[in-house]
Image (cartoon, rainbow, N blue to C red; front, side, top):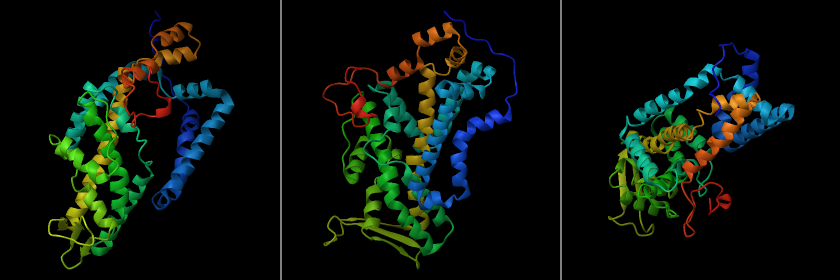
Length: 359
């Protein structure tokens, strides 16, 4: 068995090498920094430009030396002595991140649901967090951030306007994507394959409310009503009272006293929107990072870094060990923990057409 490569002497990495490697990723972002409002005003075109620039930079780098040369340049940025402690650092980081998430009721509930899904699920629940084949891309998050930012610089009716404008993208795109992730994890926590979620946002909210009675912090039961009220022009701000009146009648031609109705201060209305954003975007993103780090740690990816460096330098014993203990294979087994049953709908799995039922 190959011995673990020993750390070499500490050395200073030339600034030019750092700039060269990071330039692949920072130069496209620098263009956005010159005109940051474009990211909020036209998020789709702005992000698409960053993607094209990054792809072009990587392609040009590969042309100059191929994928192996690209990896070698990236490993040059990682001091060898750091590899020896990277696993311990990752474990400590996971515990810090988990404690930080548990600092709020919603974060603690999210961690509890994920851990139950990870312990009992037939697949790793990170799939439900990372992929959303039924939804749109993350462009809408920039739109919501832009509306929140605009509202924060205004008062009264001029503040209510951007908040109303934020609701469709926030609820239909960002929050609905989160709800589908939660839907999948509730089934995985029961040791079952997730059924396809309801197509109707209202039905999804109602059914999830029933499934999450022990974790009510994870869902806003009024989310669909907020969306409906805004879309049907039944969200009204009163300058006299500084309150927002929302209504969502079942029959728009014949409203009744039994219909959903909510009257709250502008501050409380804004707070409800921020709460939806917090759990659906901020906390969800933090859980993604924690879960991904944990997956790589359990799969041996961090422990393999010294051997990857040695293999790039031509160490045949390191190459052999990586073949026998391939972290990529280990991670795949942690994600998909057995063959896919023939009768399940793998709606939440990535690249569904490529998922083998005999894996």
